Length: 74
Image (cartoon, rainbow, N blue to C red; front, side, top):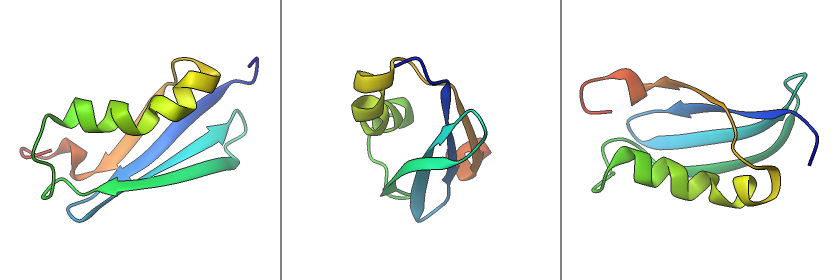
């Protein structure tokens, strides 16, 4: 696809919320996943597995994350 999209997300202690956004920031789709306290594998693996369906269609997507993703356990 030629649309420029990005992923915005909030990775909290109990939930991960990801939003596929268009170039203007409008939400096109969303997905939820485990919070940082629930992740038992490497964080990048969890994140990449959730993005895989979107990236299969749109290619690599830039992402901006907030929340517990910046803490010592995230």
